[in-house]
Length: 243
Image (cartoon, rainbow, N blue to C red):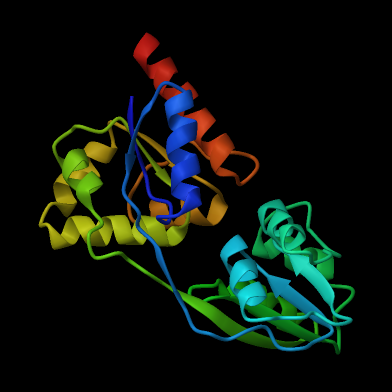
């Protein structure tokens, strides 16, 4: 089972490769995201929302102190990063998404200053949703997400029918994967051969982006984690092999 994984080229990619190998799959690491820090840090506010482990790391490196703010994490992965760097976390929604965070904050933030600190590709669902319930929202871009120059080898494997699965871990990984295929002039072949693979998406927004680009998604874990995504994809591939 040859499976492409698109995580950033850091410990996340290393962990993904190790996990797939432990599941007797052959990982094809092809980072589709690189982080370009802006040097900014979250502003002081009544509520501060961070949406990724990367955001927490950069905020910490910039010397951010939440003060008396209510600290909110979009999911348990972000919350774990907060705790790793010594921050207390006050709110983590049961549903790890922008919609889930808006829902849990809706009755608490009217007239309050809410700081949302994240990447330059954050969803408007979060900021617009908080504004709609009466929050005074400010957004700070902590980092930009760009496609690494050497990315895209997996698209050639896909176009040649040499992949069994792909694991998309954000909407941008979908977009960058297709951009890489377009750059090589193999977008059509890549899309065609994805129909024969097991395609995994880490959560609803990633699934929706794939669907919008005419990519059928086979696996979406109930909890947005790479571990569950990888395990479900490998399970599906084994089921296909038995047919």
